[in-house]
Image 1 (cartoon, one colour):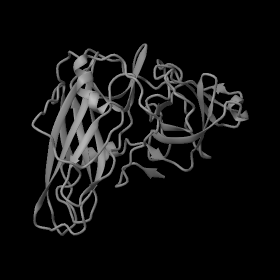
Image 2 (tube, rainbow, N blue to C red):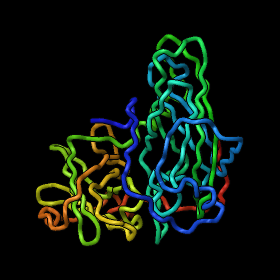
Image 3 (spheres, rainbow, N blue to C red):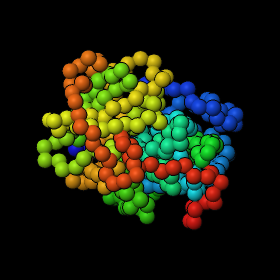
Length: 351
C-alpha cells in the first residue's frame, strides 16, 4: 500500500482540459482570468507584492518540524480555516469555483513536491454540485533541503497562494505566508503543528494494489468496476467517485452502485455535457462514507486510474444488484452531503 503521506506526498492529477465555469461575479472572473483552471501548481519563484486579503478565512503555513537537517525531507501544510457557512474548493472544484494556485519562494537548492489534497466533500446545490472543504483543511507538500545546507543558520520558506472561498457565491482570496526554520546538524525536532499535519496526512487517498479497478464507456457516461481484495468485509454502498479532471462527469448526477454475482462493484457515472471526447483513462478518487474503510488502517479514499474500454465490452453489461448506502437519508450513489449554508454567517469561534 502506498499513501500520499510520509514523504511521498504526490497529487493525483488528471489530464483533461479545463471546463467552462458557471457564471461568476465580474470581480472573481477578473481576479482569476490569468489562472483559470482547477489544478494546483507549485513552483519556485519570488513572492509578489504586498496584497494579503483572505475574506472569510484564515491562512497559515505550518511544518511538522521545528528545525530541519541538511538533505532530510520534511512536510509542510497550507492550513486554511474557514468562516461558518463558507468553503474552499478541492483541486477539481466541480461546477462552482476554481482550484488553488500556489507559488513557492524557496532558498537555493530546496525543492517542493506537488501538493496533496485530503479527501473532499461533495456540496450539492441543485442543479449544480461542487467539491471542497468546510471549517478547515490542510493541504500538504514535502520540502527537501539540499544535502550541503550549512547548519547553524535559519532559512525562510515563502508561499503565495490565490484561492477562492464560496458561500452562495465565490470571492477571491490571496495570502502570502512564510516559515523561518533553523538548520541543525542533528535529527529534526517536531513542531507544535506536527499532530495537525499527521491528522490530515491520514485523510489522504491511498493506492492499494490489492484493489483492482477498470472502466468502460456507456451510452450515458462511464461504468467503473471495483474488485475488493479477498476477505474484505466492507461495502461500497454510498461510495462517491471524485474525478481528477473538471470535464469528465456531470457533477450533480447521482452515482448508483451495484454488485455483480461475482462480487465486483459497479459504479455508474453520468458523463459531462462538455466532454470533448472519450478519455483514455478514468482518474480520480473513490471515497467511502464515514465509517467505511478500504483497509485495516481506516483509509476512506482510494486512488483510481483505469483505462477506458469501449462501450461494447462484455463485462460492462453484466447485471448487478443495487447496493444501498449505509444509514438513512443519503441518496443512492452519493455519500452524505453537506448542504450549503448562508455565506453571511459570522466567523466560527476561534477562527
